[in-house]
Length: 56
Image (cartoon, rainbow, N blue to C red; front, side, top):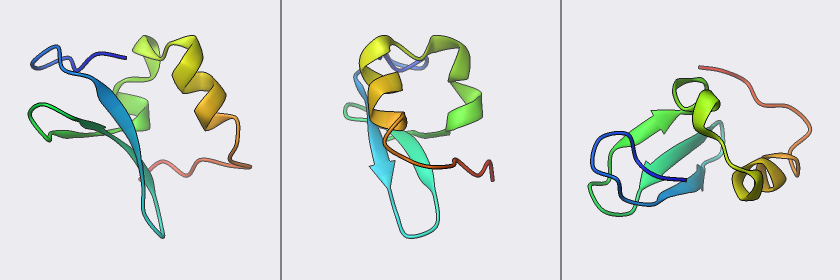
């Protein structure tokens, strides 16, 4: 998945209370719903591991 700001690679960032996507190039963080329309198959498989995603 690519970053909408710089075309870097977005990675799943998991903390105690939330899931976010973070760009490995510019370190910008995105909420899942902000990039939901861009989620690729690989990212979707990672997100499938979680029972529920709470949008914050």
